[in-house]
Length: 99
Image (cartoon, rainbow, N blue to C red; front, side, top):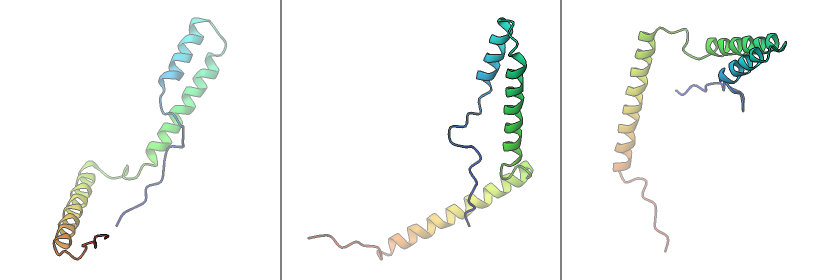
């Protein structure tokens, strides 16, 4: 019952805000007019991050609901591992050796 999770981050997409903040500080040190442009970039980056967070799977679930889902999934994994061990012990999967 696996759910395919959409890839939220594009290839090469950087979520770091630090370079933008650094550029803003550099512009302010130089008394450059590019400060407004750099601030707009930072604002856009923050808005993108907000959109990505709101689109994350499970974000609408409360922490107790997430813990319950996690417990359920762990139980499923444990059950499936037990079944795998059981089937492996039946020796049905013996591979004939090449001569």
